[in-house]
Length: 309
Image (tube, rainbow, N blue to C red):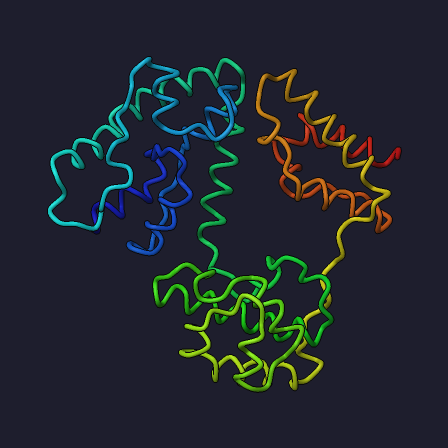
């Protein structure tokens, strides 16, 4: 694949995808390289005002009035050889991509938004190049903020174990252990197999195959040095910030309507929370995502609004 890898990394050649996040993961895993530069037609369509998160077939129909059959979407793509319908489906899945690319690129040029897509796609590739942060998996567990540092130490260990094991066994992480079971493990810190059976959401299969390892992990990290315990996670924003959050969303919606774009491409919930948290800490700071092309479009106005609140 040396020639293909050279093409993927040739910065003089734009690589066109539709909804490329999973594609990037495949390239990184299989070939050890990431395509660059990338043009994502799904994101470009949103920036051009065609709607948020449009599927490939829907976008082809909207722009070209052509219906792409999707009958093979859920067929067995691991079989070899692929069937004739699958081969046709795979071909059609990219057949119109460059045509769409050309149309969207011209629209973006007319709207002076090419830089929007280039910047966001470059960020997506950069993020895909970062090693998987399994050690941060515990932060995504619902209500993890309720746990103290000792309990978080256990949650961090078992959540990281789950990420690694689920990948090695090629199964969904929740089939191994669900989030609520991880949380309960950290909170109750069981010491015996019998206690594991009383943990809500703990699959009997996992207790049978991994119970002893889980108990060892729980004991090891619960009894570990306090210096290695993670800091407590921030609590949800206080209720008195609800009005500010609504006002920020309203500003974003108004700007999105003016630009005829989906508000989702301008602002995410996490951006709002980070902005409000910095304000509560005493100095409002824009999240990194609002400092690029979004600064002049939205960020500058939001920063002024929060500072005046």
